[in-house]
Length: 120
Ligand SMILES: [Cu+2]
Figure 1 (cartoon, rainbow, N blue to C red):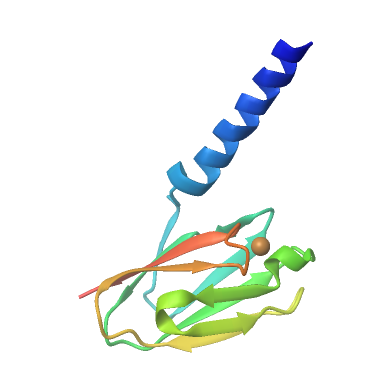
Figure 2 (spheres, rainbow, N blue to C red):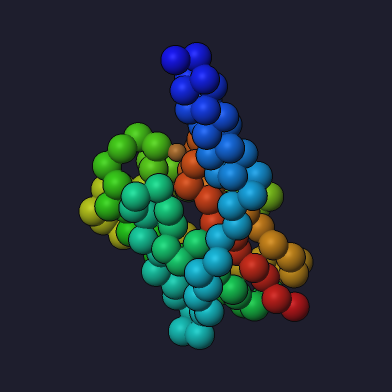
């Protein structure tokens, strides 16, 4: 019995390690028109990786479908942006980033995770 418990425990630890340290967003979206729609559902932003050009205004349109409190906020830590997302209604966040780089955006618990890639 205790072996089974240990296996389950190890599995959980592996899952947590994968989720928090190893998981990297892969889906990519390029902003051409200046607006990118991002769906918030099932624990993921889709797309979870958005490429934009530096010094160009871009609108990120977040569409939250997940009613759980986990999805309530989107936070761009490095850009000092934190916005509340209404359920079922698009929320537009306008931004213009000067410095090229990769900027993470997350929910307030960092379960939802995405990356804004700013190209120079
Ligand atoms: Cu969350």
